[in-house]
Image (cartoon, rainbow, N blue to C red; front, side, top):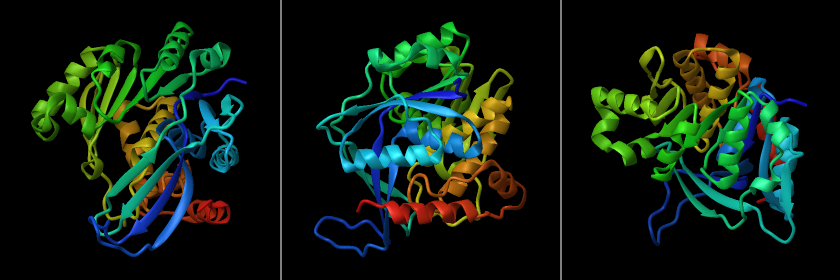
Length: 324
């Protein structure tokens, strides 16, 4: 079976807790509500892509503990192919505790990541080369091997650069679509370049000259900006929504951007759509419960109204399957 997108990236369990304000040291805060959902940058992007209508499979590792079994079943129920997940006996699945602050819409994370990543010998070349896109978040040996394979078959690589790392620059010639966070952009070019439109455009041009066809920087509630072969573009964020939790917003943006690429849309149109999907996601607790389908996204873009039918179904699912 050929998939639209193949992902290579670490999987984890997200335990998300909503509180009015994250407490400072020696202080307490009420716990409003909680949810257990699968996490990880690439896995969550694939869940978003699948909910929008694309097909995908994931190369990753998972522990043989209850958290691992939950994550695998959730991916399967979401429609993501799980045949390439490698179960590691005796190991605990990665865990992230996400604190969602209701007063600000911000979030903080505490994580335990001890499980090893997938190895090059655990990849399947045929599966990767049959895909249209490869989605990555690291420059591991497995990721770079997968990038070489898909390029040899004519496919393209989409990369999620969340935190700045100099090693990412060496991988830019192997990346076709480079989407970075504001944290990455600031780490590479400085805060002045991030918020000055002229400097931001110049820096995006520099990034594109290093290899990618499309470069995008996500700016949170300020929207996003990017550059492709037609030039510079900037898309404002969607407003007028009640942000419950921004956990996973960037991951979902990447999944929606992959969907737009599969439709053959231009980068500005794709970024606008991805921003809408990400905005709707933020109206529910956790990184995945609020991800809309394509029809709900298009309705939101036209009218500003959110169809919560699918969101409620997934909130019910997570309430029934929660681990904590």
